[in-house]
Length: 334
Image 1 (tube, helix red, strand yellow):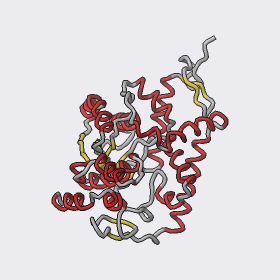
Image 2 (image 1 turned 90 degrees about the horizontal axis):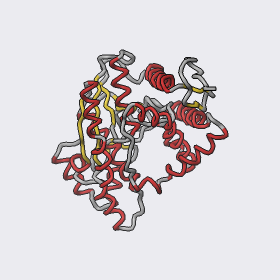
Image 3 (image 1 turned 90 degrees about the vertical axis):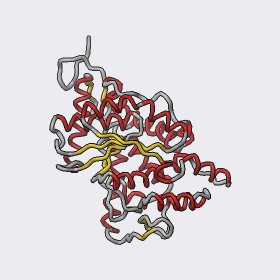
Image 4 (image 1 turned 120 degrees about the vertical axis):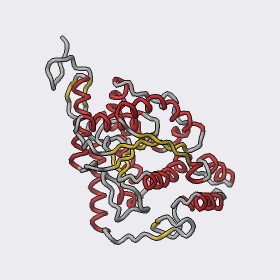
């Protein structure tokens, strides 16, 4: 006997939602995903009337689903119709990032036309005068064992701030899903880095941020990665065929499988971990609100909680600080 969907009672159930114990047809699963994203945006006031929302496009399924959903929700009036959506990608300048983004280029073009979303491409070379691979070679050549994901991450965060100001964005939406957020909590715990919880969460506080930044929003943070992938597949959204090889020795890679094993015994473990991170973030923000004062970096002038920002520390280690400073001064990037 065919099992029917627990929601509609009409169509055949094709997906088991472990967190609720429901058997859903694909139509009800997709409605659940869209409803969850809508509720998240409304509950936390992530997008308001007149906002200019930048959508950070990595080329992976999560950011493409985010772009599709925001366009669809705006079209149907589920988020303010007068909110502007401006998608952008950042080419870090290492071979795999170039391939990853170019493979999604046609689909991004389709979405820009279908949902009237502007799209722009930026590069580390244009923003910093150097590529991620330049920095990696500089560090590794000096025996500094730093992971490529760390290099890309530090520079990408700065790049998004620069892009946000350049495009006059009020917020930047990223494609972080539930699995990403749970991994972040666990990594912070394992590294004993409680300070990082100060800006963890769906609406991180600017009061305790290490650097002044355009606020980030995460509309997909309560959607499991598996559900994002299924949504992408059945909506014709490209799934990544080439994975960056540096990801395989990233701590997140092993943690992904650890959380999957935990989830078999506790279907809601990822939600619980993220909720713990959110509660800890609120406690830290309440305790230290207004106590962290931002300084200007000695070298580049960008806001930092210390005397030298993380970007300048990184580039100085790689022997590229002078080249970076000359570039940003000539380009008037600040």
